[in-house]
Length: 221
Ligand code: DX5
Ligand code: ZN
Image 1 (cartoon, rainbow, N blue to C red):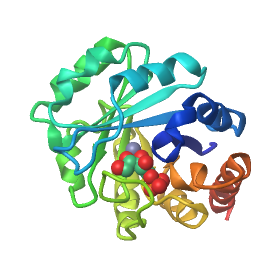
Image 2 (cartoon, rainbow, N blue to C red):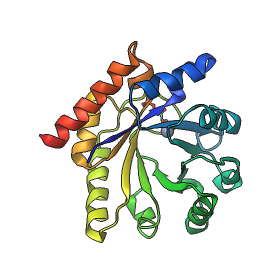
Image 3 (cartoon, rainbow, N blue to C red):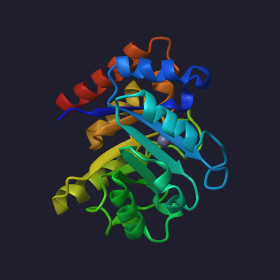
Image 4 (cartoon, helix red, strand yellow):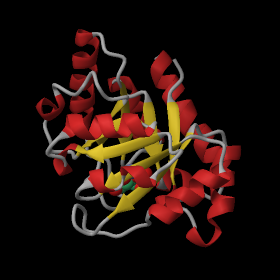
């Protein structure tokens, strides 16, 4: 199975967003990842609903919104046509209700976990979500260093999913580059999300190819 790559526009040039999205498209990424922050759940503000909708309107690729916000249930109906909606388990009192809301809305639900949040917190929803997103940095900023102990967490999650025979996918987000991509894929990740390793490079096409190569090599090796 091919590893999927999502381009996080957090490191893109927002003044030329359409061109930046197109660059990622032409480089062959599998989806566009849109980070939304509220200054409460994470100590940063990024972009909002309007920009997510704009991105949805200009690309044929699937779009994933990553909600780093309190009360995510307030915003689900704002993301019409958006294929994947990622919420944080730390923000959510009633995850089954939220997952159903996202499904009824027509999107795939993805649950994200901060680095120190244990896998036990999602034990009972693991079979209900499309994917689990393992944050491999503390959320809030691009360009941070991959947190190495997350390799063990990915590996543990992979085992749990296999044991229960679920088809839940494993996404990783934060500090992904050619080196950490291999580590994450070897541990069981199917999907890599990267901002600076894609948009921080001169040549976006080459950056995506390099990420893909390191993911494929680690799958074979
Ligand atoms: C961080 C965001 C990530 C971020 C990744 O809170 O969720 O999607 O953009 O940035 P890099 O790939 O630079 O670590
Ligand atoms: Zn993200």
